[in-house]
Image 1 (cartoon, one colour):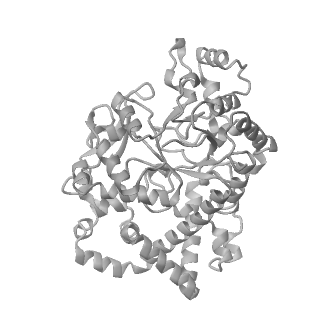
Image 2: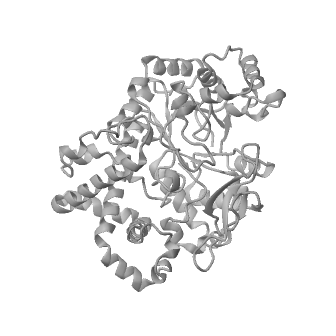
Image 3: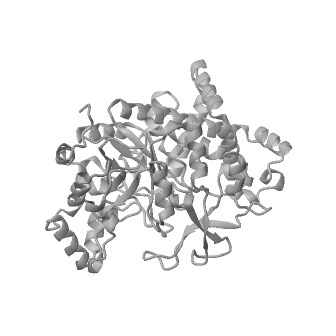
Length: 502
C-alpha cells in the first residue's frame, strides 16, 4: 500500500513529561499532539502499547492484546471521582529525567487499586454499563488475560508452567474455581483495561481529528509468560510441560559476536495454518483498533527465522527455519483487506524477504545511521540516493543510539563520509540527518524525539542485548523550544510533507 508523503516523530507515551513517574495518556499527550500539528507533522510513532515484561521491555508483554496499565492517566481517574486530590499530588523523586521503575510501578498500581475499589463502591449505572459493553466487545481475549494476571499474582509471578498442574493445563474445573477465588483481582484487571482502552480511544480520536495518524508497533513474537501462550499452548513450540523447546533470536553479526537470544517461544506455524491463521488475523485486527498504521517488528521472521534450542545460553548455535511466508498475509488480507503495514526489514535481509514485502506492498525501513560506512563500505541501500518511494526513512530507531551519540562515537572515516556526502560540517548532525530523511523520496520520514532535541547518547531508549537500564528516557517541555516545531514545519514545506489540510 502506498502512503501519502508525510513526516512524523517517534516517541513512546512513557517518555512524556508528567508528575507520576512516567509519561501517560494525560494532558502531556494531548499537548504533544498539538506540538506535532504546529510542526507540520502528521505521524506519531510509538512502541508497543502492551504491558512491560522482563527488563521493563514493551516487547515482552504479558498479552498481545492488553494495554499497558502504567500509561493510564491518574488525573482523569481523579476527575471521575475514583481518586482523591491527594492521590494525584506530585510525589518527590518521581519527576526525574528517567523513569525509576522500582518507584513508579508500585506508585501507579496502588492508585489503580484505589480507583478500582472506589469504582466498585460508587460507580453509576451508566459507568457500569460502559464497562460491561467493553467486556462484551473484548471478551475473546480479556477473560483469559484478567484470569492470567490474577493467577500470576497469586503464584508470585512464577512461570505459568510452574503453577499447579490443573491450572497450568487449564482444566475446566480448576478454571471455574479460580474465577470464583480470584474474582476481585480479575475485576481489577478488567477495570484497568477498560480505563486504558477508553483513555487511548479519546487520545487517538484527538490526534486523528487534527490530522495526526498513530503508527503502532507489533512485535512478531510474544512472551512465554503471557496470557495467550498459556491460553493456547498448541500454537507455540512447547514441550508437554509447557516450556519452550526452541526460542527466538538473531544470529551473530557485526553488532554481537554471540547474536541475540530473545527467549520468546516460537510459533508452531503448522498449527496456525490448520486454523487459517485465525489467531494472527485477530491480533492484526485488534492492532488496527488501536492505531492507524502498524509496524511489524522483525518482518524477516515471516520469511525465515533463527531457531535456537532453548537449552542454548546464546544465539550462536541456531538455524534458519522457513516462516509462513505469503500464506499468513494472504489469510490476513482475505479477512481484513489491504492494510497500512510497515515491514521492519532490518538485519539479515535475503531476496525472499524483499519479495514477500513487495508482494503485499508493505514499505520497508531505511535507517540513515546505517548508511555511512568505514573505508567507503557503506550500506548502500540506506544511503539517501538509493531510497525508494515505498520506504519509511528514519534517522535512527528506539534500538539505535541518538544521532548525536552515534556521531560522537563514530570513527573519523564514517564522519568524513557523512560530511562529504551531505556537504555539512557535522556541527548540527542530528538535524543534518533529519533534513536528509525529510528530503528522501521515501513516502514517510520519522525522527526520534531525541534527535529533534539534538540529545546525546545518554538519552537513548534501548541498547539491544543489554538486559537492564533501558526504556527509561523522558523529556521535559523546558527542552522543547519554539524553533524545533518551526524548523520541522519548514522542512516539511520544502520537501512537500505537510498534511494536505494544513
